[in-house]
Image 1: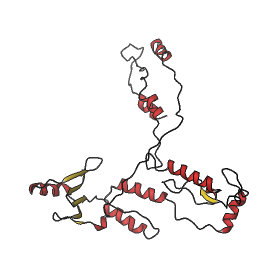
Image 2: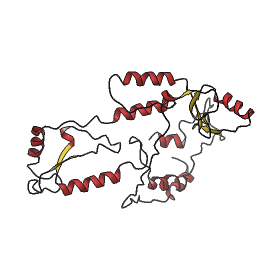
Image 3: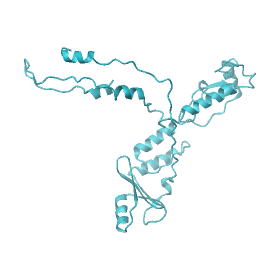
Image 4: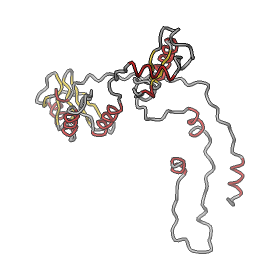
Length: 270
């Protein structure tokens, strides 16, 4: 780097050590239960009556209601497209073009496994995420035979996996999932995912697991937000710009000039 001004600016940059929080407080997010009935219980909209209906032309339905002096509540999707109309107890849902494909998929899925999926007029992307979450759920709890229980107890030599106390003196041990099954954690039911704990340690671990489950975003594949990163990246002073002096004369012709990577793309690509 030959520019002296840039060198001096870099030297003047403040050097700060990252400060980690002693503890993080995560708030539980309550997800409202979807009370909308499944789409197979909807009927084609014909007139304004209580119930759930569907229509391929919500704009036309709304125009007809406005001509009659009725102003329905408009429900928009995240992209600003009308996805439903509501007036008192009458709800008219939009019928996506891929609705029949989603319903056919659920019909075929019901033939091979039990599931709790219900189609309510979601887009194909949202429906795909619902199917993905459903496939990530663990199956029903398997039956653990006495031989498997003896094998697990033998691996731990009859002692609690956490505190090391003798399980017999504690009135017997209790099986615990190292990774919880509930709270969208998808813990395994395999032998490697089970541990014998005494009653006190099992109760304590269960309480800690519940405090960590269902926090922030319900999707466990999403990363967590870090306030430290926000302060260090967004609220910090912007670095000095690197300027290419194209106005200065050069020894040869300049055929093409292109920005290989802007600062944002350079950071995202790390």
